[in-house]
Image (cartoon, rainbow over all chains, first blue to last red; front, side, top):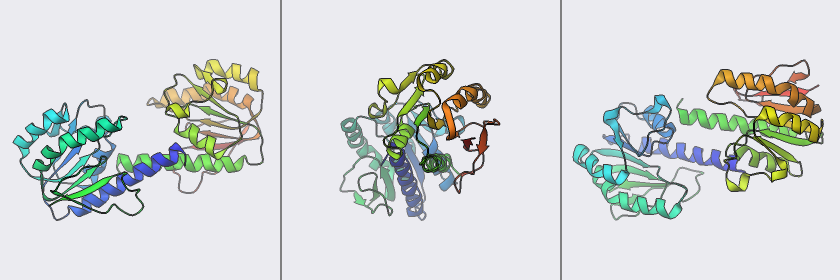
Length: 162
Length: 162
């Protein structure tokens, strides 16, 4: 499989996870948290799939397409670990969906970041809320959900908060 | 359609064009020219689809995945317009497939670059050879071919050299 094939497969898996999560929270009111804006493609997709939801974006440096930049009052700019306490203070536990798309080239550092973020993310995520992550996460508060058909195990991780 | 949807569609169209072109040149011996290496995904795909062919890459600044960097004797480093005369001197008219993936954010500049490159590309491309381009190209030496099914017209341009 070429890098082009594998990239297409990864994007399709990501879209399938996002669409699946959007269905899973259909009966769960609440906001949406996007960790890692990147070029804004995922944010744009969530915005389209979850019209009417408040979407808050966490990003260190905004470098997205100009039409995919969230309004400034929906943006937590800076280090995720610095922003999370502010988000908890501002939003409470009202999140229906959190998407952690935080992997960098450094696998160990990405896993470590997910571990460090998780307690705060769980303070934001309400019971019944869904967590998508590109890094493995583990907590007694999380129930693992099956990935959509055709997605390679451990490419994404899908959980529901108990 | 979200930016994620449209990006996936663009990559799928690109792959369909590459695979189609690989079939179209099955009976045409010759080398392959890749204009624009980028992160190397397309190069990797061509390498996989066209095993045994010499693939020459034209790139201004190499910034690809380390396993997608062509050998130095297959790389024309620098401005396309500077490299093309060197390629003609070195390779003659022995190209079975040329892939012009040269679009930048600046549409007018990309079209202009394709126009400027085309005469030299046609000196490299042998009769029966195929040209894939992400920019419109026009020449009495080129016969337009139908795009693979499902690809939006003018997303890519497929021609065979008369």
